[in-house]
Image 1 (cartoon, each protein chain N blue to C red):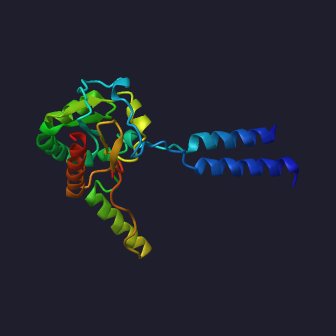
Image 2 (cartoon, chains in turn brown, cyan):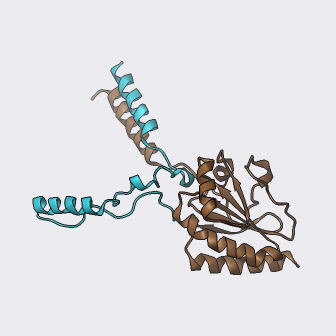
Image 3 (cartoon, helix red, strand yellow):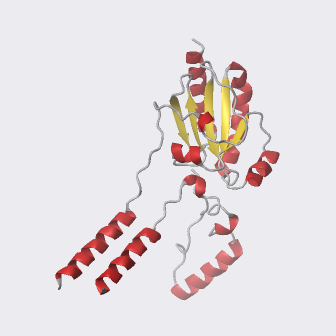
Amino acid sequence: MHMPRIKAIGLLAILLICCGIPTARAEIKVGQQFPDLGTFKLEGNLPALSKTNVVLVDFWASWCGPCAQSFPTMQQLNKTYGPRGLIIVAVNEDDQKANMEHFLQYHSVSFCVVRDAMHTLVSQADVSDMPSSFLIDGNGKIAFAHNGFHGSETRQQYQSEIESLLKQAQK
Amino acid sequence: MKMRLILFSALALAVTGCQNVKPWQRETLSDYTMQGDRDPLGDAQTEHIFFSREEASGGGAIGGGGCGCN
């Protein structure tokens, strides 16, 4: 066999192997600073934040079933913990704004909903599931992260985590 | 020249063959029409033909499909 042919086969093999390797992920993790929401061109009004606030940032889309399941829980959390300093920011990732608006007609909520139309924030967060959420303490650091929504299990986790963060923030 | 052609073809295959779909890009994949099990009657008929022909039943399809949320 000619040498160039061996080289070509070798290169082809390397290319095929490289093709199968998933690209490195840069998912933001617990303990890291959450990106400043104000620096992204999010559609909608962001609430003013202070050091006494605990923020729940949730990435969702109208086509995602578990996201729809998480909405009543987030609404309940907002009702219970909102007066104590919890701020929920639901970041929509729909390609079309109309889909988000249609969803919100059927899932009326009182917490903040913004739209990440260019997917810049979610790309930076590089979440691994939809929905994904982050609980951020008063210093802007990610205290807890959730991938997916698993009904009462996730709800109970949210409650205990928010309780502990609010206690810390109000000290 | 032939080798270049082979290399170019391999490169073209490598760069176009694999795409990582991010979780927030699964809107089209989550559409109802993308579900493999959306037609129970059609699935039952296909399964009937399969086991009549192959003398084997089950394993013809898996449930679910779509966005892969959670």
